[in-house]
Amino acid sequence: MKKIQTICVCGGGTMGKGIAQVVARAGFTTILFELNLRVLQLAREELEVTLQSLVDKGKLGSAEKQRITGLISYTADARNCRADLIIEAIIEDPGAKTKLFNQLAEFNEPATIFATNTSSLSITSLAEKTDDPGRVIGLHFFNPASLMKLVEVVAVPQTRPAGRNSSCGVRLPRRHDRSLCHAGTSPVVRDGGMSVTSPPAP
Image (cartoon, rainbow, N blue to C red; front, side, top):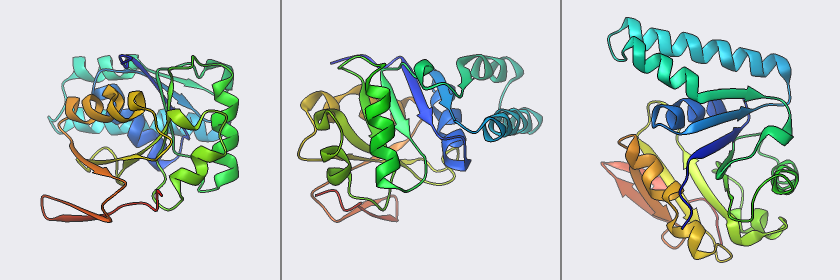
């Protein structure tokens, strides 16, 4: 089982920058990838404002803020997206998601896991259209990602054991005090009074 050390988050919108904040705060080297340079710059600025706000409220120390900031790098170049785990949080367009995965597969090792944050598309269908369906999983953070302590992990029929059991699906949320819902066979998962409907994985 490959140890997850570097995570690339694709998409600099609300969800993408929220996930980047979560994984960096959990101690992972984090790459935030966004093609639109203006959106990328806004994500950087807004993350700085968010972290400083936590410092001002006494919820985060200054040293911790600097540690988190130092773990995040920003890029608009797909060639810089080399990681152990890639989480896409781009537009809900299956063609765009599979194109991204196949593009990034060219720059990454065979053991790299590709996770989609989708909550509405069939992860099985997405996996089928990638060059290596066995390393695709669903990793659904709830919005806002920085506040919602719930992550849904979806393994589809094609997912290899490394993807099902990897630390990306277990240690990532738990390192940041998060609850897990493993989906794929049960239509509804309940956690702490919250009802979560699983994505249409099969």
